[in-house]
Image (cartoon, rainbow, N blue to C red):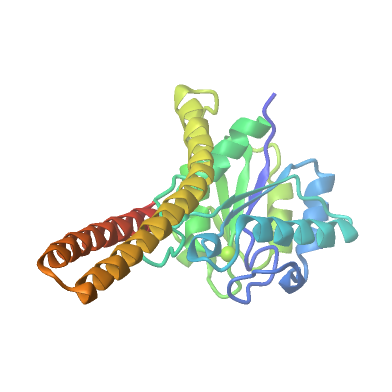
Length: 282
Ligand SMILES: [Mg+2]
């Protein structure tokens, strides 16, 4: 039987956001976050963190470092008696700001799209229409709404009557948001519900798995192409030197040999550049 969950944004919702967190020692819990999670834990809601982490695509940290940051976050919450059940992070980013080409892409996992919530619902057997998405930015509530959840936007300054249409309510803090979730337990959920056992969900799972696999494969290809490029680059240099010596030696025959070797050097150089270019594109 699918259970309702509480989906939470990470930065500026659960932990402080100093910009891009790249190492575990930068992790600081938001002041009342642990208390709010404890209340939700006690009420039996699975806690699922859904976070855009474009720092991976931007080259600020790799997936291992991101995992270490999340491990630290879990430990800090555990020390306060609060449990995070799952963490979904989207490392992708479209456009030129993504310096790591393997992660430069549009992704249905990236909020405001609902992919991470749908994936979690499918993997953890969650009831999205009775679940909540809580976050401090517009794209959090947009993702929640797109997944068919009820949504809470955290903003201490925004008045509820000025809330964006995707947010069901605006709350000044995570504590207030948790209270709102608990007060509305058992009430009718959001509509329309998303059926997580549809073919579309199967497809989404496959897309997510394929994207992960592609990242791994691309990482492998990248070094092979670069290595080939480096070898061909060395060959180009060698042909160049060989041609130079033939020219220095002089004589009609040697001039012809020298020309041929220069042509080989130019060909190898072009090939090396092509290989480097391909390696960068992937
Ligand atoms: Mg945030």
